[in-house]
Image (tube, rainbow, N blue to C red; front, side):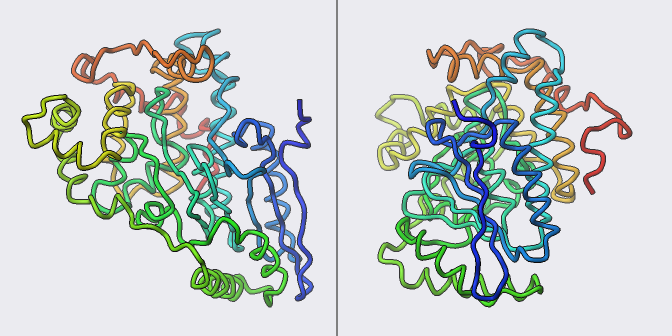
Length: 387
């Protein structure tokens, strides 16, 4: 068992300019670097120090091993607290989600360049770290998803902000289906903004030591952009075509309308009637078959929440989105399908969740909306200091 201090490793790169680049490496390789509260706290403390340190010009976030940057959050402690006091908002859930969202918000507002090496698996909480970074590198091995519908949650970590800013209905599709994006898909929807090959990592770290870092944030961002663009041009494996981009019209068609309309269209798509044009669509798009299967097996409460989330105003600020999500997340743990989803996927691993409601149609009117009601007023909200 690793000690808390070993779960995130911190180091610095000395550069020719005299400045340093901070490197934070998530270091629980066996758990695919899933975030626990200790890791969130360690990252927040070190990143805050680096943000204030004039000698640190930029920061890199990386994951140990070759399988994953970060496969999400380690939610077992929240699960244990939730089943101990069912129906109640727990301190464990409030503490984890509030501190995770504060870390994500810190990255969004960091100022200095933040690079995320998004190679391998990036899911859930890992995506929360990545989307907050200024330079989000994907590779030919990137597999990026928001799979919360499978554990009775919804795309949090700022999903209420960034999913609604993706092309067409792609954000809603990603939230409802837990679709695994390639690096090309991630570039298309804006999760990634730079592409390198997985074997370019050592060269990148070396090049970072040679950049003319200064005290000017804008100049540093431009220098890093130029470096990554130059390295991308030299990649021996170009990104494949984005499946999401190629099928945007189909995705928009499927994801348009009321939740009942969407479920009906997707259910028809997932049926085995070979005579329908829709089944031919599935056969022609095997990527869609898995997405549809995951969606239809997901928590009906989660599907309802993802649909509500997709209708939130784009006028909501990032801080307002995180505040809304904190209330929704702790309510999902107290009253939603979260405990059962975690039990089925991570605890008993029977992959047979018994959701509270058999389908979306059987959810009582207003139930999902009630989960959006904050347990706190403005003065007592754990994220009241986010602006």
